Structures are given as C-alpha cells and as structure tokens.
Length: 159
Image (tube, rainbow, N blue to C red):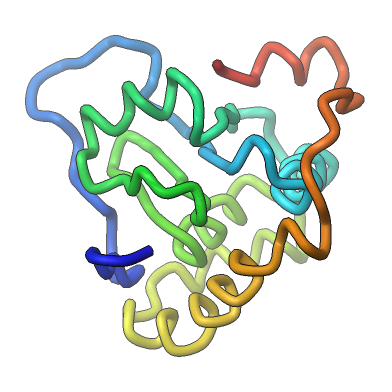
C-alpha cells in the first residue's frame, strides 16, 4: 500500500462525533471479496467464533464505501483486512487481534496482544501479513462464489 503507512498502533480513525445510526457500528470485518485466502479466513472465523456478533463485507462493496466516509483512512486498496467497531477501524494484524476477542479459546487469547505497540506489530506480524497479501492470489486463487454458509450466517454478510 503505497503512500500511507498505517502501522497498527491504534485505530485508523475514531468514531464520527454525534450519534450515527446507520447499522455500521460494528463489529464488521472488511476483507478482499475476490481472494481465496480471505474467503477461507472468513469461514475459519465463522467456525471458531464464540459469539455471532461479527458481520462481514467485501472491501469492494457498498458497505466498505460507506465506512470509508466515516473512517477516511481506511485504504481504498484491497490488500488489507479491516476490523471496524464503534471505537474505530483497525488494519492487518491489529484487526485480527480484535477479531480474536470474538473467538473461542485458545484463539481468543490473542485478543490480549492488541495492546502491543504498533511498531512491534509492524516489525513482526504486519511484515508477514504484507508478504501473504502480495502472493495470496497465486497461492490460494480467487474466491469461489459458492461459499457454503448457514442461512443465519448469510444474514451477517453485508454488500
């Protein structure tokens, strides 16, 4: 992602001041809707979640576009995962550490690492994340349009 370095030190942007009731307060995970690895990651989250609170939306969709208006520093590039909650928007490894709070043990324990300083995450986790992001299409291909999810899970997918 050229131009902006959004090291995972904290949220990409804080919430909009004043009440906003557009149904997008989160938690929402924005992911590359065309990426096979990303689609598998979403299915993995669904299989390991502790609570069914997270909703999902492709970075290429209308939901992500609306969230970019609220959080302008959410990148237009689709090489990152974004976790959005009422407290802000988080990228890459910081996003996944926030997602961990919704998972069952032992994955849930990763949620405690969200307090690590951004430079620690940038040197370790984010570097690995960026490498995977560069080769994800070559290794895992494109997402299959026919993902098997339950009707309850289907309702948690936003456009």
